[in-house]
Image 1 (cartoon, rainbow over the protein chains, first blue to last red):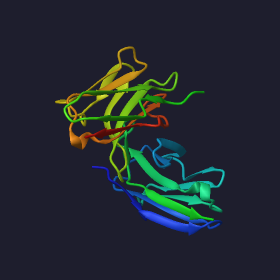
Image 2: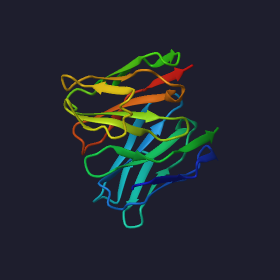
Image 3: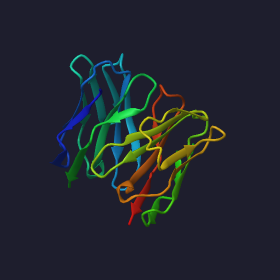
Image 4: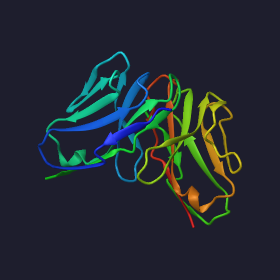
Length: 112
Length: 113
């Protein structure tokens, strides 16, 4: 049974710091991995989708890496800003073409 | 392009009352998902549709929950009767097909008193 774990559960950093959020999954036979952002009281916004054949994906100040063999993904945020404050969730499909299994998320707070 | 639309955004009801949530997916998206998110947790799947067919409803509590997607476009999720433990956020998501990136709506926050 696939399980997704995210550490840390919460993170506070000053503005301008580079930071890394971690995601691990128990079954390495994943089809893809998706990172989301969730603001309080809002739905999920898709940030990055990494296919199983890819090692990383970049979008602006965000870079996500994937190491299937070790069951890990990281989300790197460069030069953090107060607007980056949110909960970040990673998710993998239960199997190809099925619904996502989510971690509990990392709540990020960036202070100015 | 419009995103996934959900209504209502908030709903407060008393226990044992019925409630319904509506979702309109992104145009052209064949796969539609209903997820349940409890406070401090990641979303969990309730049901997945491929067009109008429910292909994964193993997590749906069928004694009180029902869903439909009659024309393979918008969908309705119903709870009857609601219980206190149903208080949560109900999220709808869609994708072009089940192998593609999923896009989420803003969710409906249900409070059962």
